[in-house]
Length: 128
Image (cartoon, rainbow, N blue to C red; front, side):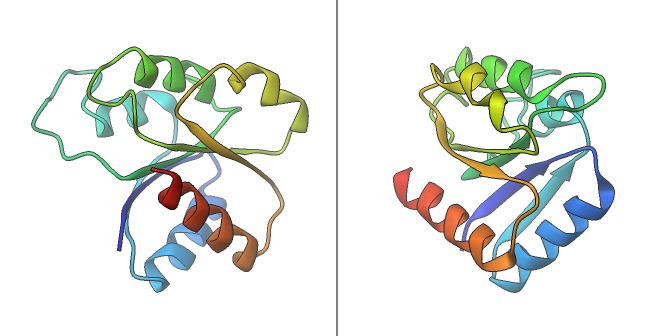
């Protein structure tokens, strides 16, 4: 199965998504803000030896560094530019921020059901 990075500032949501994805056999890493996500991706601080996930599930609204900033940093780095992103948001109007991002595989709205999450993750992984 796939390596997936979940980035969200809500610990209970991260735990739920991680549980669902690990139950499906995925290896899951977590980050709770954009700074932690950049470190996990080897962007800041720079670490080209850091193993990359096959999918990033990225919340938009987070403290310290938001999801849009993370996606721009990923797009601007050759190592992460093609990593698919599944944007997870409670705000449907945030789509406009991400429309020009070629690595955004899909948008996924909160709240969600486990089957809907599995379907979105499956589609995003197939797209990559």
